[in-house]
Structures are given as C-alpha cells and as structure tokens.
Image (cartoon, rainbow, N blue to C red; front, side, top):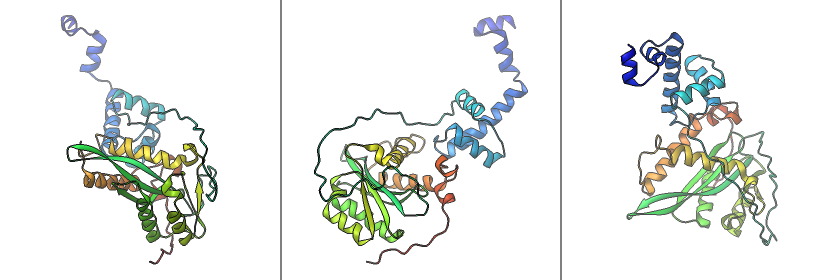
Length: 285
C-alpha cells in the first residue's frame, strides 16, 4: 500500500479517503448532486442564497449558506456572476428646458402592478453576413414584481423602437397615473415619445445626466440578461446567433426569468409567483 501511495505521489490518508469515503463525504456527494440538478436546470445562475431556497423546495433540505457555498466551491458548481465595474460621474451640460425631472428619485418600491415602470435600451449583438452587428433591445420593467412587461428587439436604435415598445405596453394596460422612468436618451426625450406617454396617461421621469444609479433596477436586469442568459454557455444554443436566433434567445430567457428564476427582492419568489391577479384595461387603438 505504501508503494502504491508513492507511485501516485499522494499521502496515505488521501488514498484511503478516496478509496473508502466516509459517511459525511457520501452525504456531501448526494447534496452536490441535488445542487448540480438545480444549476443545470437554471443554467448555472443560482448563487448560494437562492440555492438554499430551491433546495428546500425541491428536496425539503435546509442547509446553511456557508455549507452550500463550501459544496458549490468543492464540486465546481458556482454560479456565473457579474463583475463589478467602476462608474464615473460625467460632467456635461444639457438643455433641460421642457424635459421631465427625476420624479422617481431612486424610489424603486411599488405597491401595485404597473404603477411604476422603468425603461432602457441595451445592446445585444447578432451575427449576419459573416460579421457582427449591433442589435438594440428596448425593455420596460415593472418595479412591483420586477417583471418585463414590454420589450422589442430591433436593428436600429431610433424613435420607432421606443414607440413600438410603448404600443406593446398599451396592450397590457397600466395603472392610473402610472410613472415611467428612463435615462435622457434621445428616443425618450423626443416629442413623439412624450406625446404617446401623455396619450396613455403615463407620467415621465428622467434620470440625471450620466447617472446610471438613477435607473439601477433596469441596469441590473440588463446585466442579468447578458451574463446569465445570452453570454452563458449553459443557456446559449448558438455561438454566432443571427438576428432571429438572438430574438428567440431573449424571449426564452425572459420566460425563464419570469417563471423559474427566484429573486431575493421578491422574498425568493419568481415574478410570476409574486404577482397577484389583477385587472388593468389596455389602451384601445
């Protein structure tokens, strides 16, 4: 036995531990298998805090965060996470005459569905004609349940993209005196966009210049979409997706986000599980 250990260049204790695993090691392996099943089903997007909730729901097993973290690290089951980036305050002057102020003022809580909404456009590339192109994903998120209530993917970043997203929102309906917050992009400050908001009875709110924190919830979702979805090898089905494939990937991730991805902000419920039945009257065109 000593000779075998010398050949393998390993301590004798490690040899016996591998050959005759203890009861605790077998229990850890079983727990790791359950964690792996959840990670595979959720495309490796679950961290140790949400993993504890899902383990209890699936197996009735209550584990502490430290134990879950140890198992995920030991068995290489960690979630894909976003890296923190430094932000810099931009100092530039803009003409604010006639534009809405920062009405939302970083109050990201909402007591009722579709009464407080946030919007943004994020870059989502696609591959066609043997080269990469920028696609533009317009999104509107409900702060009540963090759900995506309207979205539109287009090849051009223009006023029509924002208006199409608003039209989709009108089919869903909004609460009376609803508020929609966005940055000061040209598509949101255009006269046509502001007139459509007024027609739907929606008040506008705009972030301060160069301050992404004023729209932090929407920026956070953009990161979740890309890191956990579009740039995640466990989720993505194509390395060079065309425009249609990328549109389908966005739709698939939003469905996953709504129905299967628990959120700590929603008491570890998914947006659809958190949401209560309600009735809103859509706009009539």
